[in-house]
Length: 89
Ligand SMILES: [Zn+2]
Ligand SMILES: [Zn+2]
Ligand SMILES: [Zn+2]
Image (cartoon, rainbow, N blue to C red; front, side):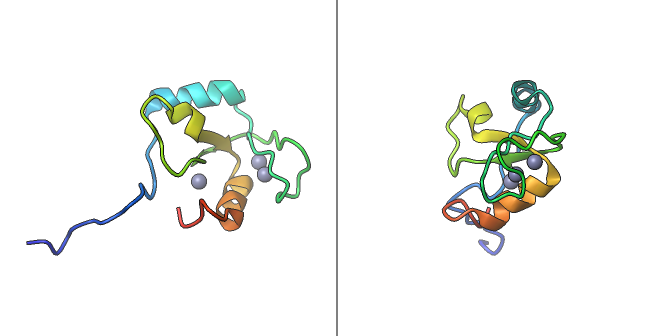
């Protein structure tokens, strides 16, 4: 019985635990942490952050907060649309 084997080399979508989300939200002060130059905003976005984005392809234990980024919806979409190596997440 191997019909429902879920094969994924990478974690497609990591679910961040509540403490991690809290730490990230605190670090970001509730604001979008995006500062990518592919976005319409120049410099830090600072819109209210509503979504958590996994910015590292692999997440080591204890590094979850570093791998997690608080983004607003627009930037999160942009992050996935424009990411090269981290695409397909
Ligand atoms: Zn994301
Ligand atoms: Zn943003
Ligand atoms: Zn942005």
